[in-house]
Length: 279
Image 1 (cartoon, one colour):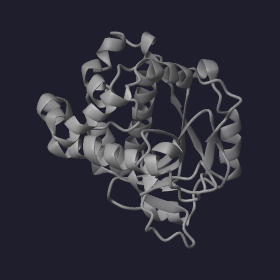
Image 2 (tube, helix red, strand yellow):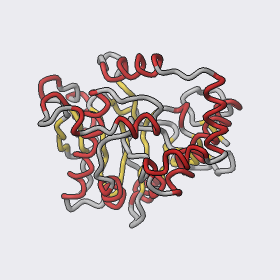
Image 3 (cartoon, one colour):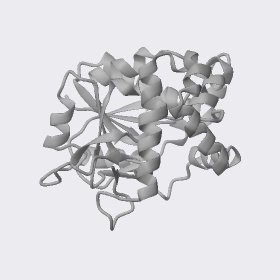
Image 4 (spheres, helix red, strand yellow):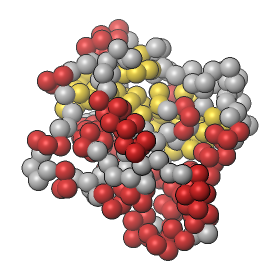
């Protein structure tokens, strides 16, 4: 049975409109409680690995980011514990702009291979191959997936892979960097969801300020990229990556393709800034 897992805090739940939309499509809803890190035993340090975050994200993570990652883990656990082959996952400020499931999405998710289909995310960080055939297609396999998403579908195999990491949070991504290379990512275009602009997101505001405060200079960025290509970062931080495949995926494939695609500025639909980048 298809089920939508909606993440939100009871005290400030923003998903009533989303739930009404999902019911219109006949999709049952299971709420997943959001996470306030300050209310967890042990506090922030018990749930985040800031040393690893400084390598993987080039900055430390906020409490809100850690809580968000833990809430998504709870959603994956809910799917793994259910009898469902796959589920949809939404943060409660997401809103549908189309039918959230179609034959192509179901075909992508009905597999034993770990698979995630993103319904909406950061377009400027999502790269697909320019060689893909767009005729009668809405689902595209990514060369580089978005770093996170507020609306996506995933199958049981992907949930099990995401949960196998089990370590403290070290990335702002909803999917841990150390296992992302094991998953097939797809994105839909046109997008089937959006973020409700009328709902305040303190997480995004805090994340934006954090990124501004830790922004690299162009010189530092070039040096870091050169160290990645020269494998200096692998030698220095192999214990963070844990496996060479993780390093290749995170530091070379993801960063090089994403950076090249953003520099070229080519999109699947050049007239729409929300369409994925192509490479």
